[in-house]
Image (cartoon, rainbow, N blue to C red; front, top):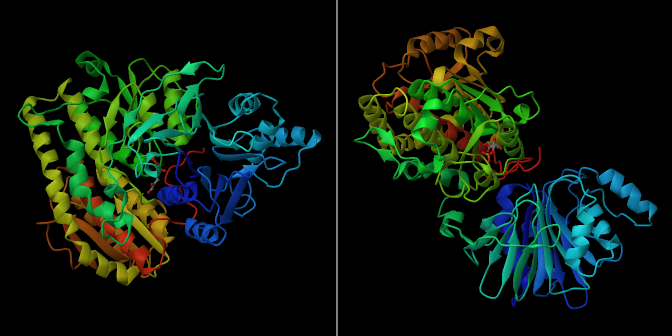
Length: 608
Ligand code: F6R
């Protein structure tokens, strides 16, 4: 979704802003722009399309100055045109605004401002902010921003320039994350840390309602009543190299390949093999709290929701607690009848997904204790949760989530083990699970060796217009995830189904043109899945099976078999999903798709 970067300091701002925008590209966007204080007023350069086009435009028409703000826009109000791209100006070109979030009462504000004589130039909700600030008489830019925001309903992460105070950037946050980067005699504002870590690792995460004022001399933070607020300076742990391609053609392939290390990193320091337990201090749950949990509700979207479905099976088996898995976007608007003793778990790679955040807040209001399973350190969900587990999977840049999924399952398994051991799971059983968990990184490494085989299969099916993915039990969510990966990056229509449910409808789709990917590792349901595959074969479907090494030869039944090493059933999705990630990746590459930046998608979905 939209991205913000701003700079104030001794250096020329434009190259820093353009590089920051490049680092934000992964979030998904369709236009970009910069605004610079030039000494003779604010100058804007903006365009529809990619940051590279904007960089070429700036190099043709250079703009210099050491204070500026910039933005990548993911269109919500108005088409992704040059006109609608941020930054937006007031009537006189004296105030420039970049904004993430949505002004919900934009129409009413626009009408009121037009009545006062303000002329609007774009279709965006953001432009109302520039005119509101223009309309406020306050003595300083921050006073005018605070007064303007009094009229605004909705969400914002905001950075503002004013020609009358050229050495200042004012920043505001409500519902859309913003952080400050604290450099050596220079300061940054950004929507996420990746945009600034080239320059500094010291960041200040703004809280809801904070207003920050940046000058070349420093920064301070105030609340809506202009009272000074103190916020800690955090250290970003990610390395710059982690934000690069490291020799891979795409971030998605890099992230798929990193999974032996990222799963290991999620487990590191937490698995207690001899005790048969998991150390999860960040949960902030006492042994009594763990024993008292009556019910769990998992809140998530997309791939994280699929991980939640796997987590349900894991937790129910290890901890014997009933688990519901909810789409966060649906949960937030329902009546919440949570019984006492309900633990809510918000799962989110980015930690900023608007629906997951709001669902989590709704769960708190309903009386739940809430923990987060989050990758991005310092993100809003991580900070608002009462405890949690960080994935430590490193930055995920590819829009299609891959390494976060396997780390989420690893984290959920740690949680199941931890809760189970404080309930009825014996030490011996805990030791067994801990041992199987510790093996996962090596198993994932083995599966990655299937890459060439997967590429050959991809070549055969890259032109198929439809795919069906089937799985059962804990591997049904893997079928959903395989279908999601394929559709989002290759634009092939794909559906995931519980294998037996196929008979109740989707079987009508099966003919010799329909590739059917069946997740069939050796487990208690294997024979049942074999029967489901027979049903597909009888109707001419072309079967691709993900099955376990040592299983009988399926060549009479399926057209392709990819054999993965055996894992404990509840942990097998960490292994079975890898060929499906690779299949989606190779098909998308063969179809010439922009794998890391699929159309219409955003990495961090900060609007509902
Ligand atoms: C799919 C994908 C999305 C995200 C979803 C939730 O590849 O990336 O479905 O999983 O938008 O995002 P997070 O996990 O950041 O809350």
